[in-house]
Image 1 (tube, rainbow, N blue to C red):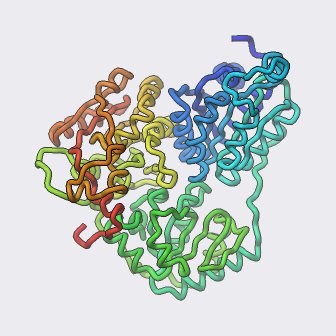
Image 2 (image 1 turned 90 degrees about the vertical axis):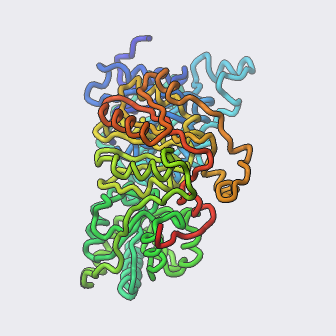
Image 3 (image 1 turned 90 degrees about the horizontal axis):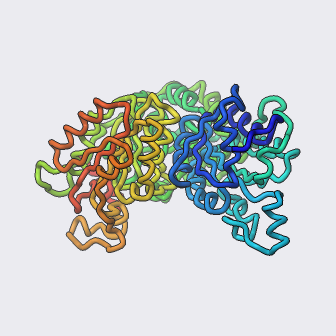
Length: 572
């Protein structure tokens, strides 16, 4: 390694600003354009008062997903990769962070103005490695999935450009992309001047007052109003504010799948996690019976088409700095201001008696008979209801496990993490790594589909290498089960053949995990499962992979209801 310079550099500036806003760890994949910044991070003497820890990842997918999950607990995250091959591979995770409102900082080094970079390429008409020939291409790819995408070319302007991007990320809870020419890593620049300025969201005082008054009037007039608590409550630190409003009004509330555990589910008034037809009967019926849905900070996806089509004109939706009440939209209304104004507008209203209460958080039984000793989705997740402990964080992948695991009670805030809106399969395993770094006191418990796991399987190596302790249950049926259900559910109900494109090669997952340094078990019966669960719980300091072998034609009933739009019955 070349010695680091004596002067204060752009590298130092970036480290100090990231540390200031709460970052402590950076998930990285090396490459020559970005590697010099890693030298600064790895030198403990360089920034002793603002140290960052670098965690090397096996791929950009892993780095991006881990940074995304880290951000959910720490409020800021960072993935750093090289130009072209690295930056383009990181696009998918950053797009997910954009959709789900997470201020992930994506950092890339790129060809600069050194003699071997752009001038060399222009003189000799050659293509630089990892480049497309369009040296704005990487930045352009990020412009629609970030709140700021910058190519930093000049050390004198670097502090202002870094500050602007980080401020926007924190204000809007969206990712930013910072691409730095590699000759800038050692370039001298000014030190930070005062604390980072985070801009205020656009705010219209009249719109805030009008929206709150209109919402309060509708809530007062409604017989069965229901709060729908959303993910922006967590992103903007408004969980306690919402809890106070719920207590003040006495209204019951549900959450979306994305926002599950936004408050501890022991909170008074909680009815359940609403996931459309796959919901429990009580939760589904409560949403159906409500004559006013008050959505506080949630992204409405196509999981909720039925509700939107039926209730659009009677819904209140506060999200993304605006409030919609029926067909009327009020812009410039930050969620924090709306909640405060709504509480004030309702202050003279008496606290209501609850019109709905939480039913049992039950797992649906097997949708058809299976031999009694086999593990099925229903039997496995029923066991999880009592096996999971309060200091565990549940992390289902976008798989057959997601819509069944959401019925497991989570009795602390932020104890359930899912990429329920973006829905990239493979997210959960790498997210488990990021969560274990963000909060070592909460053990991640990952429910991974075998297809998704195969996309990021090497993350087990990162977990073992850095001494992390997630538990990864790989639900093995050699099928993209949720995709099969959505494309032809009759495969399960009428024994029709599987679509060829939904079949997955079989792996020996337990052997694979052991080869990467993890503890592992393969279970095929309920008796085997019990032994593995005991072994995992007795060893809280190591990463475990449990290969859960399921019948090929098993599927959670919750997924079948989702696929067929058949609502739950009272007996489910």
